[in-house]
Image 1 (cartoon, rainbow, N blue to C red):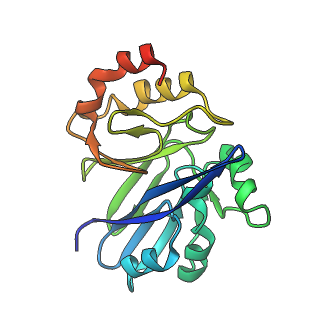
Image 2: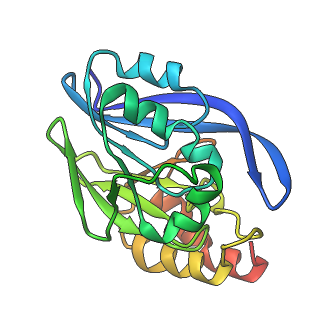
Length: 208
């Protein structure tokens, strides 16, 4: 079985009084025995079907916008797995799950392991206060949530976001990764670090 499985789920993202239709990438990383689920979005049954009979060692939330966490408790309960989230995200988490707390904190530099694959936590605030990416050096993959997409940084026009901060996170934490590192995003198509790095100054000029 491939070390990375991928499920696309559909639903809504809700913040600041707006509701937006979105398709989310849910990433399942590990082997045929155990996996980590990254960003449990919209459809717990579809994610559980992709997991199958494997053990889920953690449900990791790259950030706490509702479209990335709305199925985290359901998946965690179904597989008896902990929910992991950077504590700076609690202001957003509490909007969706005021009566349910994450089980463990994500910290910069922390290493999570499933199926012999190490995922190193990279703290990349900006899209939200505690946004995190997960870097798997042996796979040459970084899972960027909504921090970096094909074509630019994640949105920063809503509450608890900062354009200057996300640019600094991308500049100092993501772009130094090897150029051939594949970027697996929270929405849309994948890209590579080397394909995005040349456009940094353009993003800064455009402010988006």
